[in-house]
Amino acid sequence: MANFIDTIKEINKKYEKPHIKMSKPVKLALFCLRAYLIILVLLLFYKFYTLLIIHK
Amino acid sequence: MNFWANLFYKYRRFWKAVKTYLLLAGPGLIVMIADNDAGGITTYVVTGAQYKYHLLWFLILLGPVAYFVQEMTVRLGAVTKRGHAEAIFHAFGPFWGWFSLLDLVLTDWCTLITEFIGMTAAMSIFHVPPVVTILVVCVIMGAMVIQGRYWTWEKIVMGFCALNLVYVPAAFLIHPSVSDILYNSCVPHFPPGGMTNDLFFMLMANIGTTIAPWMIFFQQSAVVDKNMREKDMLWGKIDTAIGAFFTVVIAFFCIIVTGTLLHGSNISDAAQAATQLMGINKWLGTFLAIGLFDAGLLGAVCISLASSWAFGEVFGWAHSLNHKVKEAPWFYVFYFALLISAGSVVLIPGAPLILITLFVQVIAVTLLPTALVFLILLLNNEEIMGQYKNSLFENVTNIFIVLVIIVLSTLYGISTLFPNFLK
Image (cartoon, rainbow over all chains, first blue to last red; front, side, top):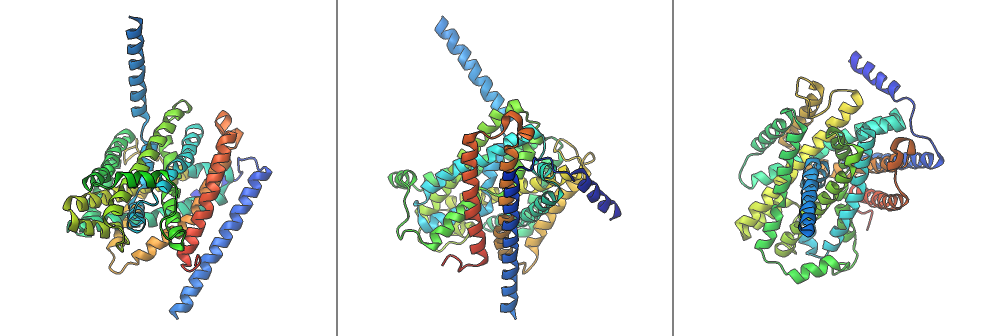
């Protein structure tokens, strides 16, 4: 387990610095992606919540 | 004499080109035909049963859509020599890298379960118990990869791809109306009843089955494992185009079979369709069942490799099919763990298989937009792609396609979560 965690840390360190130039279109695209995923995750949680309520 | 010499020269050049293509063919053809996996065949079967030939024109349009998306992975893989997962880590950092990798594995594992569901359902028509089907599939898939040569694996899989064409003779057996098929293929129109919620859902299902996130990861990694270079890119594109053609052909003939014989029937999956067709014509039912099994097998082969390659790239394991088990132990351990765990779920009594099938449609919506957006961003980066970056035409086409796919697949995912959403 300790080896595994060390490997994860090594990977994170290896790719720490993004190599793509963070131009305005790239930043906008990444921002839109984050917003999209947050909304999707919230919808998933909402669905899970409604299923729990129905089950009760 | 000059004429004959020229003709002979052109003939030699043609055959040289064919041989070069055959050497480089593989990733594009395999990923496109495997795209018609168990879930895909089910979608086409239901499309034919519900709408007869009325959506054939729409299906033909999806061929170029699939080509434009997958062609980008050929360029990215050949230029960067990295799989898609590693490319995301390298370009965008660990947050997006881990998100993509873990989402890929989860989506792929669930999709693998649906492939096993399809294969066991197909073989149960021949009274083969599910446990036997799963064991045999695991042995076949294991044997294909451990022999230690990518080239051999590729040619075996291409043999399975050829088997997927079984729907073509099936369609010829039933003598469908050619004029109807031609009209419905060439003239865009809505089926009788116009645009309804059910039709919209079916259109989205067809789009969702045409572009799956694992396809992007698979083809890029396969291009790298095959050691394709920039000079091979043209052949990679031709390979992808031919694959897109065949994926449409298979879907086309599958819809013709069910549209001719099962139109109006309440069919919800391909195994049910195969059972019904057995009652009409034993050969037809057999062809459909074989096609369903083959589709599930192809999907399982590609999906499990897509995940194993991705993990191997990121964790730095030896991760090529050209390595034997001793040379790349973790790659093969991961591959078999994924395969056996997914197969085992299908054997659990009372396992929520329908829920898993629905869950796949939803979870794919989280991965597909990110994979597509990263693809576009990477292909536009001059530092990474150099002279092979997207041209203006490619950007306009690909960005339009990607936006449409994202919107429609999101609506599909949400309507799966909330069935009354579109009503």
